[in-house]
Length: 435
View 1 (cartoon, rainbow, N blue to C red):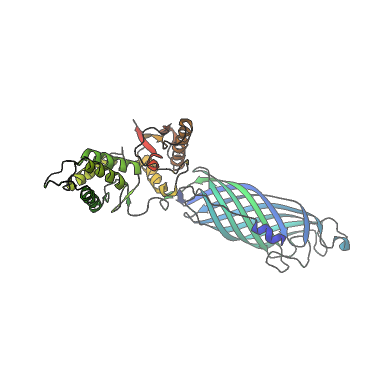
View 2: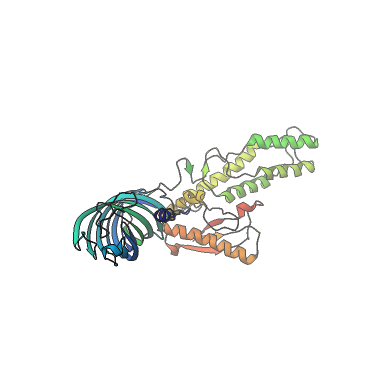
């Protein structure tokens, strides 16, 4: 039960934060280990280890590792200690060469979860062994390795790694005595487990790959249709006119405020700041349109002859401007929104910021200011702090993608400059080009 409880108590937690992926990358690592033998000894005394490794990442999920461990495992006593006259348990010193395959199952997370398997060749020496096991050194034993671990990306070059390993041995002498107890899988063959922590340095990051970037069908230049439902707008207008019994003058359109509609469209596009998928809406607020119509109806200014072509022309002109700005690199950067009282980057915006970083890396002379905003809830001081955290998190993400921090400044603007009556649109960051 004790062994089972130990295994079940090891929990691996994966993060929701984004990280870039690469292929053909090389890294080296070093760290410390805590091994423990499962065999015929009990009441272990001092267990310690160090390790170093070289790892090749073929792509975002598949890696191969060569690892060298030095382990020292000692014990205070053995089973039947009084009967055999051995109150002190054996000491095992091992040098282990391991060849492991690792598979990362969360490649787009900053905290990556991986599993693996491999084989090890072991040289070990025993002291205070229990006869008939001799105090001597042996070479040639092997183990089958089962691995689970996490890797946390600090920046482009450095990762932190935590790993748990289970190693099934080919011998019953590893613990320094023969006996009926063996490994975790039963039988008499010994097993040892290891808990490790280490640092990894990528001396060659290889080639960046786009698996975590925007999926196919998403564009950044906002030239696709905004997807406004003209039938819905027309139906709202007709229902509003019918409900108020306002006279309709054929062929006229006296009460429609096209400047207000244009302002609404600009705010909708600016506030969403998301990739536009063909055939979908960028965030037009139908409730706001309906309120505008009802107010116009109440003042007897609106008619059913709304010029939908003019609304369409306004939207097309706005999108054409976005396209022209994208072409010269001054409006291609896209901002993101945040949850209430939260500065964490939401998963749906990873692809957006990845594209922003790509644009900045492609335009080395472009410097930017990241402006952070909040909604109007909360105090001025707390909103200023929150908006600064939002801007700083986006900056840190762009830096992790390779953009020089000297090209990025941040500015905390709190609840200033709201762009919408909808609070969720105001919880945002915006990019400003610094000349």
